[in-house]
Length: 274
Length: 251
Image 1 (cartoon, helix red, strand yellow):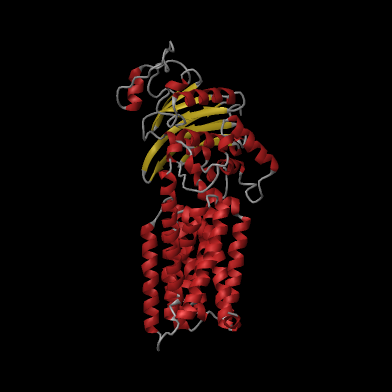
Image 2: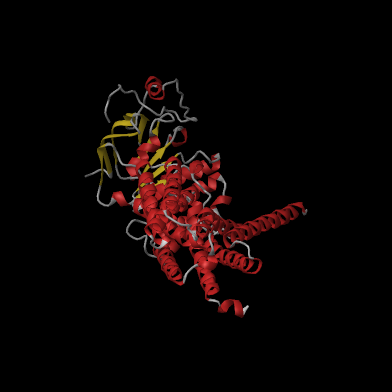
């Protein structure tokens, strides 16, 4: 085990896995309670456009992804504020256009794009040290902002209209949450890839919600669940040479299934007793 | 300004369609106003405009002193999204959050106040329960507790008796009578009967505001507001709710 830990790529992978779990646990419960799962899917797919352009320009892919996801987050946030309603039409269009831009620019870039698959499906084992530092920065920003604005974010997730009636800066809080979601997604893309990001934002929260019914506790448990899932997936990936992103998500999905199954059986037993 | 809240020539709508036209209304301190009218008549919308949840197309809403920051809101419990994982106590505590204090932690004083309100509304035993597990009537009381913990000067309740049985209704009416000692109250309802003895002003809303002021009103005018024959039963109270008035009459 200590031999594995001596590899730099393994250290990077573990660090990024833990940080990604923290981000998921901190932002995931807000995404689930505010029903922003579809928005998150849209945001993560628009990242593909940024990746394509970054490849074409020959700059660091993470920066391209970040620029695109942040822009999309601001656009969706403004659209929501203007119409005061959900706008899945607009999100769906951003989603597809983002992917299309990515495909186009990758097509225009000469030669084979080697890291492309790792961005689509994630490869935690190939995260370079520089990206570990960027991930650390993103994790600190997301966790710090949620800690400071916790009451405000809870207020808009619980009852947005009431928050408005209490004169909270609801529009700014919503935009802030949208931008934090974008930053989290950029962090997670490295771990599980564009296609699987939503799973990491939802599965740990779903498992945590089976055990805790208090928002703070759900956050904490989601973080722990995330770490468990990410590190198990990482080991599976290292030892059996499974793709890491898929391993992480499938372990998470299986864990959720087991938890739900066990709970159902124990509940049935409880009710069956006289 | 003698009134707590003065609304003048308020107009508002969704998309292109106006739901409220030229609404003028005043709320005095310790007033008890019933806001009645048919479904879709704009009752909840007017409440949301007064509370600042929606911004009017035109017209003004003026508040006396710091009243604007001290409005209590009790939304319809049936429409409340109760999927958020929060305990009764923490939910009531969120009532203390304001635009100027939401960055700080809850104070000991706020926690004590929340406890006291829960005690008063016979919810203290439920304080650790999740809001998902409450009955409709209990959730309604939690929503009232959340509004009261901020010590409002004006309280707005949207269909508060809908989820309640008769006993809870009576309790609510007693509570409102007590609260009226220190705040103005506005109740949105499609059924004014339970409040027949408490109200001081009544406003019939169907896109326009038809009436305002206690007295007696004939059923022909009510019919005009609701668009169909209406009967309001007094449950043994020997006077009718509303007085006659001409259309276009201003409060």
